[in-house]
Image (cartoon, rainbow, N blue to C red; front, side, top):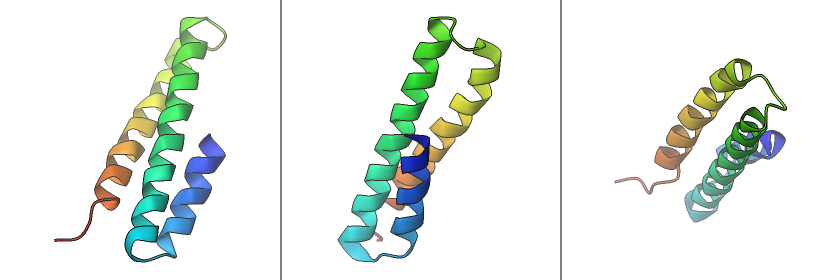
Length: 74
C-alpha cells in the first residue's frame, strides 16, 4: 500500500484532468490502507505503537494533501 501511494502520486503528477484526479484518489486510498494496516499492527502489538504513530501521522497528512489535489480546479 505504501508503494502504491508513492507510485500513484508520481503517475498523477504526469497526468491532466480527470485522469490526474483519479490517480490522486487512488493514491489517497492506498495511503489510507497503509495507515490502517499500521494501526492494526500497533493494536496487535506486532509493531511498536510509538514507532508507528509518526508514520501514521505522515500518512494522514499525505491523505489530506491528496484529497486537495484530487479536487477539480476552480
